Image: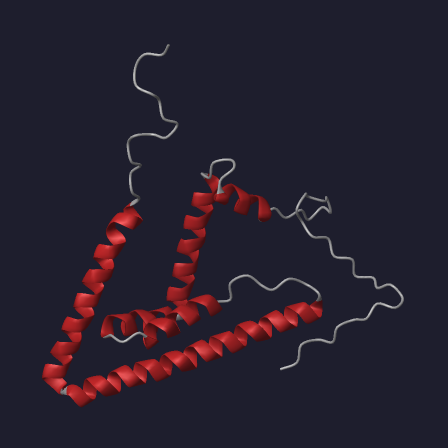
Length: 185
């Protein structure tokens, strides 16, 4: 015979929400209100057609930037595959694409942020900050978590040791094997 309340394997208290999940909706709402307010201020000062032309110019410039960054990223990937190595890390293509996307989003604040991301010093600073934040997060990852698995994938052994989970590429071909032609432009 048991006495007392039955115990549940689940905790009764709800876990705390992260700061990001708590403040992100508020930040997005404030950003939208700011964008709309700025567009109405510019429309009142310069007129509706000027605002329309600004929005169209932002969308066109953003699409050109994204196309150029995508083409550059594909070209560097193609060259790396032809060399037989791995593609270079970074290069700013991802941040350029993000800048182009921000240019395409209607609004003046997003256009300014997109234009800032197109500047190389800003790209380098943002890249350094995100790399440091990612490294810090991975160093504090608990065993068995997603961050721990990502850290294990990033293990590189220049001395030739085989690490479980790494792919070892053999460059020699067997008779009868067909080689794929390199990707063309």
